[in-house]
Length: 339
Length: 242
Image 1: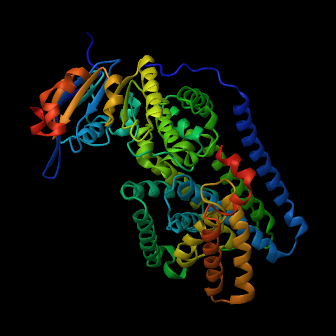
Image 2 (image 1 turned 90 degrees about the vertical axis):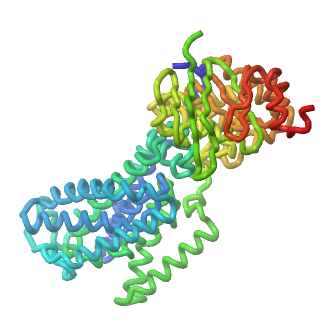
Image 3 (image 1 turned 180 degrees about the vertical axis):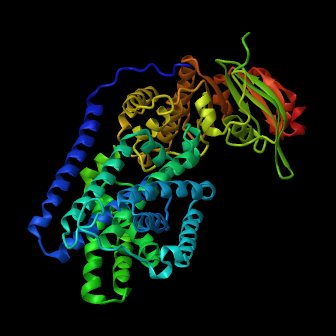
């Protein structure tokens, strides 16, 4: 191979800075997770704990979406299909075959990844907005299929039968703590995965594909393979979280785990907080989800209009004032993430 | 003489009824700087795209280091050792200058730490080291050209394709650019460049290939080519030949 420029020895300081910056981010994430972990002891109210669990679930969901939509730039508005695959796999495998939901969650994750690859094969040949439209249409088609699928409960949905509290059946009655810590674990896991991706060559490749696919290809990056792998990882995580959500609420129907509104809710925290950033999805979810729960209970009753108006307003405000998302308000952090 | 690094065999490119490249055959030897010149619409950019793998030729073959790479896409050609720049710069604007170059370096260095080290070295080489931490979007146009060059060089190419890298620069900047291209060749990289600015191209290249209307009308040393009647006709029209 031809040697290009003589690889002069560069001052090591900048690399150390870079590595130190990344380690600092990791330490902050761990400390933040530990701090959040003490919350249920400070706030023992069951309703508040429920909001915490949902918020952490959306932190994880939006971070999973961010892998494909943020880092790789492929905006999916049909992630509810993967969420639904996870939820239904988990519940069906448990109810119909008596197998522990842990297996169901794993199976759902694998199935979602495979389906993401099958759907990606044609869909990633279309670019930009057309890809986004395709994701919406496919998710809607899947919703209709499940609505009419008798074996899976069709429109009535599935109720997980009560069982004694145990980690094997993932049921804990009225005790919210196991769910809380599992959700916290999922949020931390997805964050760490993004952190690893950001430091790996996949992170560079995906961001290159997002910025300019043609230029990326000229540098040896396969845009198609990048999109496929990002999509599979994103779908797998989304499905596992979907499985967890089903176990937590113990009742699922197509409207609650496969709807377009859910797809929006998965992507919105990342959009609000900052697409393609490590902290954006977490920040966005921490603002949006409590807000949505509060407006849902205190303002809108059973109607769904007001929370959507609130999200819409927030998104428009962010898009106008801070298109890079709220995390860009922290200039030092932003610089660390870029370098 | 050893076998040519790049061989183009009977390449024809049709876009509907338009024939952009008509049965082109040419060789590029290792270590050469070859200039691809010709008036607008001559088919330079198409040929360039065919070599880089961005455009699939309708007929004909592209051989690189004796291997047929006709079926390889752009990414695979980069892995084979063909790198390119773009006429309209295509930097990764959400990334830093350094990260742009890291993307190129990752082709040969799977570990990001090693790729970063190499990217720093390449930026030093093209004279952009001071801007390593800047956002790519903040660079001046001449700096962006250098960034494209750095990114391509970071892939350790054997053949470097430069698409009008010197166009639009001031004479002094273009002169620096030409120096840079010479030092790249001195590292053992073969260079094929498409260029419009004759004053700079001619002293820089070992050999010029002149295209007009999809065909090669002249090839040879810059002096021979500039005096070639067909070239004069193509550039200035028939009447000026006398």
